[in-house]
Amino acid sequence: MKIFLDILLYLWQLPQNILGIILLLIYCPKKYIIFRTSMVWYSDKFPGGISLGKYIIVNEKYWEDNGDTELHEYGHSIQSMWLGPLYLFVIGIPSILWAAWWNEGRGVSYYKFYTEALADKLGGVER
Image 1 (cartoon, one colour):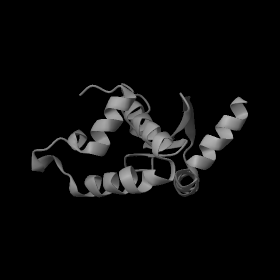
Image 2 (image 1 turned 90 degrees about the horizontal axis):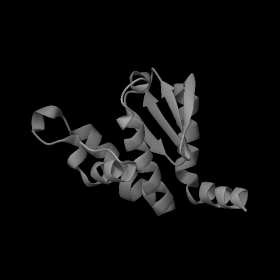
Image 3 (image 1 turned 120 degrees about the horizontal axis):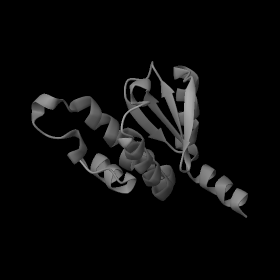
Image 4 (image 1 turned 90 degrees about the vertical axis):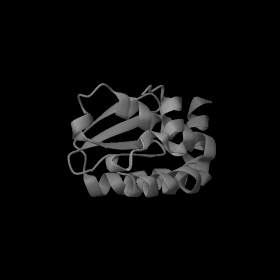
């Protein structure tokens, strides 16, 4: 029964899972950990962090941090589980646009944007 539910969840998030696999092929991470229901891949080539379905890719600099990055990205994974194919439109694209627009000089925390604040909350990150 669990395998059946895992397959359904994977299919529910299929667009994100496909993009996650594509990014894994592009960024060729060398190490990973199993983190709750996701796999966190570490790549020195990836600039930050991204969560796409079952796949989380973060820069290697987060390998030995306090775990907030993994928890935050796991929060995005929960959003993906909830929204399925809508995740990319409701969370993914706005999050990427926010990351591209945001900088520290604007005086607003990166984690105040709705996609990021909810990911922190779901992942259990307190800032």
